[in-house]
Length: 114
Length: 111
Image (cartoon, rainbow over all chains, first blue to last red; front, side, top):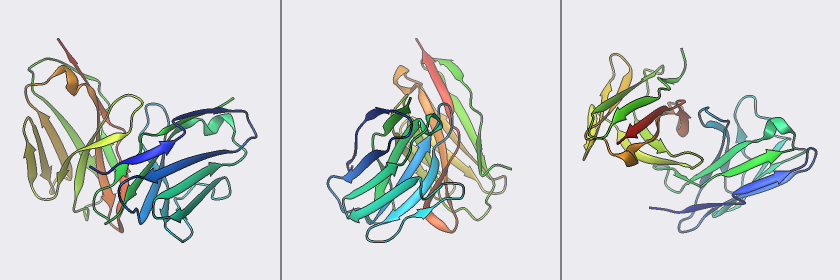
């Protein structure tokens, strides 16, 4: 199957700093990428949909100025958590699709804000 | 009613047992459904897709009941390696790729 990578896999940062997470499709061109967040023992929640070359579409309740998404190429999307706080600590997972059928998930990034 | 609802479990079963999970969904217009498997601290992996009445793949059978708006997943001859959380996933009708995940049902298979 298709491969999606995320970097870093784990990050610890201090409150008030910004963190960038990268999502790459390694063997296909991803026209659409999705960013999810998963809190412990909770379901994955879609944060935003990102299409290459255009602005991301955010789900209700997700602050676009806090979670900056850039999808500059067909193989890379980035999520920047700005001015991170402890409540932003979560598991962030991206997924990518090229033909709007199956989504391929990245391995996730575990963010801990101290 | 939640968009997608699952019994969180855990379901504790011995090896070789048959176990079934149910999932209910609220959007009667939904056309496709998925079961994903998620291991602890890992990304979800697609297990089965369900587009019509059901689907079968080896020990796994998924069934769809549109009238009652539920999907089931049956696992036969459980293996230790089946221990995981099983996520019921339903795309939103207005955006096929916007997936709504259930909270998952945890399965523990013991020797």
